[in-house]
Image (cartoon, rainbow, N blue to C red; front, side):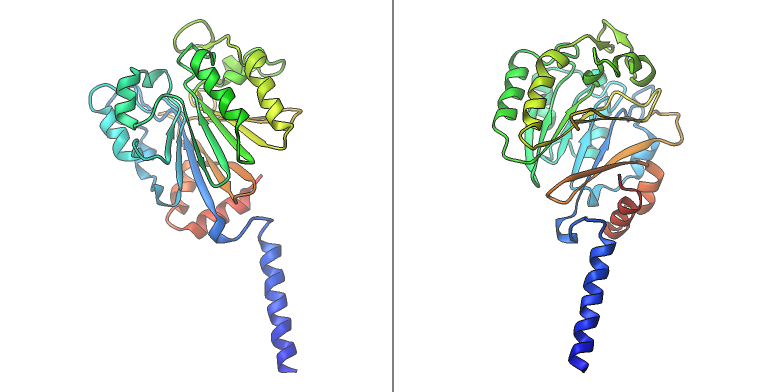
Length: 293
């Protein structure tokens, strides 16, 4: 009788764990990534004040969407950014923006990487692009690089990062939203959201990869001044996100990504809420589960 009671209690306990998991995997497979972008202010005195309160110890990978400082590679701003984000760390991924513009040599010296590269971990292939290289288009050697990576994927999940939300250009729904969404208006200038080759040359390749059973998330970082978050899931279930901060906004959202080594889950969460819960992996997990997509 005692043995049967013990077995019953174990069964109830196990069932409770399953029901409370919301289909997320166990703690040993928890991987949290934090995306933040447009942390600049209107001068090079500092970054956004809230960023200094972030503790990155529970965020396995830092995803930076660009425009870190007003002039990131001038004066002491690069040192400030490096002290916060550890730019040479292979798990700090940075898709540069127009305020981060510099030479290939200087960028390589600061990060030990080129302006576009790939990083693979936890069943995710991260692809980092330089959308300033040809003013929003992905062409030449960078396009060749992207196509080669997409042709040789060994992971189920792909996260692609570019500063500009280049996927909005010439899209039947998103194009008209550019001026009310992105920091850079639709136009023809260095900081603008320029006409590009995404729809004709990049999206067809993404669709080919998606049809092979891959999960694709594309994240742009040129947000913050008008909106702090953007989300669009198209008819092929390719996910397009945007996230950014604004120096005078009190309620900036950050993009929190959770990976259980099978699927990617994401949620936009106010930075103040993340700061309050960042000291414990359990608090982060509960925060995400309570508000998960």
